[in-house]
Image (cartoon, rainbow, N blue to C red; front, side):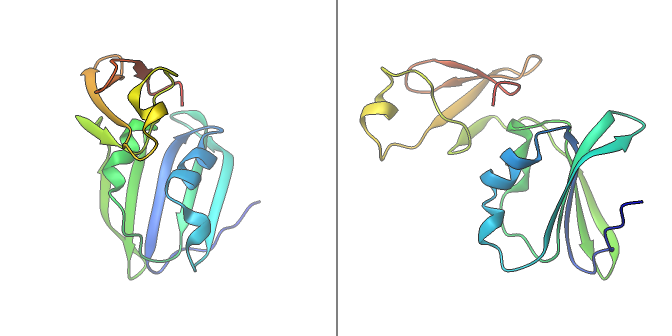
Length: 143
């Protein structure tokens, strides 16, 4: 039986689609943190069948709501003094900057490298975002 000790203070990102924990790890730049980070892949889940989980043993200063773009089914648990003090169910943000990249080679972001990649939510029911510069579509299941 796999045993990952409980956290005293930190963040647990739960209900990640199986196999998708690494893209969240990379987006959050967790390799730069000076604390323990555990990635649990393909954990059994009654609701999802299989899921990934990320446990971060320490504070995390980032807008975690933006993770809804990568996986809107996520839940984020904030742990303080060994207890869950906040449980967030994520939603799709209206505007996203720097999380997803435009794949259109003719987009201005391909030419002007310093321009931020910005997307606007255009179809919430299907999770469709469009680049604000060229209208290139992005669906959150394509990342």
